[in-house]
Amino acid sequence: MSSTKKSYSLEELGWRQGSVFFGRDCLELSADINKFDPDDVFIVLPYSCAVVNMDFENKEPYIEVLRAKKDSKRKRSSQWGRNPRQIQLIAEKDDTQYFINASIHDRIFISHAILLEIPQAQDRILADHIDALKYWIAKRYIRNAFPTNFNIRASKAIKGLQKSIEKVPDDEDFLNELIGVYLKLDPYDQELNDIKDPYEVEIIFLVSEKGRLEYADDLTELKQCFLRVLNECNGIYISNHEVQSDTGLLISEYKQLIRLDDYDFISFKENHESPLTK
Image (tube, rainbow, N blue to C red):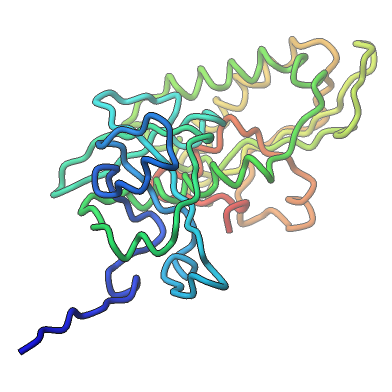
């Protein structure tokens, strides 16, 4: 009597965006990756519909994965999209959490059909870290850039804002209500070489409605710290500044704003979404 091996689809096997597997379970990777380690964690990147598509010949012959390495130490500077080239994520297995580090350059394409042959790890990347990971990768292609001369002029204030945020204790709730720091810059696409020609800046600290109602003083104080340093920067004129709720911001107004990318991580704390991610 012969036995028949049951064939499962990728969907039935549970593969999704954010699923992970280990290098030791996929020997085929040795031909694709230099110096890969058996304990390397590989994260499936495409959206779930593409992941479970079984048309390997015509539609989805390859699948993109991100290689990451385990780390015992938290690297706050690489979490939540702070660093454009390095990211630290949190994974868990059996309610035990651990850190993994990845580089934007450690993305590869492997044969999609391999997922039918290798075991999916029980480990899971935390959901809010998957959201941060998706936007971190996309930001490499969609991010807005300020003029270099504006960055030079405002660098002291931008660094000061980062330090102010990092000094906020983890148990302070008001920072979770800050969606992001946005600027309206005029001119936004020109290099002003003469320091006597100022960049005109409008500043919005975009917050949740809860932040506006319950933490207005704390958020205003954070904004004022940023303004004090920015006012000291030559070649910058601040025409307007405010703490504003996302419920009161018009789409037409939002489209004119550019986000300070250094602070994208704020949007992902406590699953707090930015309008940019919707």
